[in-house]
Image (cartoon, one colour):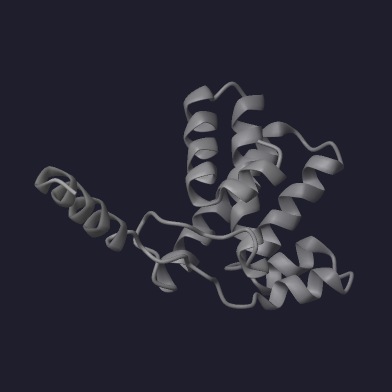
Length: 147
């Protein structure tokens, strides 16, 4: 291999070693309550920090025909509570958040719903930003979730 090829290989190796590790959120107690049939609003009241609770509350509002502004508000709260939880668990503002890790799904659902509701109210820049953030966080989530 040429010296320029070796230099390129060292550069790529250094860059890839600087990539943050995947973030795996801890189990969310709200997810078990929701799976057990608890009402989303009641779960949000007991666990206002829970991405899963806000995602479920937003999804329910959308399914029940709530105004797009309401869904936008619920999903925005969930998105910001999710960012707080990610940071508390070592996330540095970027890097993978795998869809395959079930406790991450509440978080990943929030930007997807925020993107949809932003598009519905005509906030194109927010729709694009949230869609890109979701894709950068988890390509699997981007493919699995509407957005």
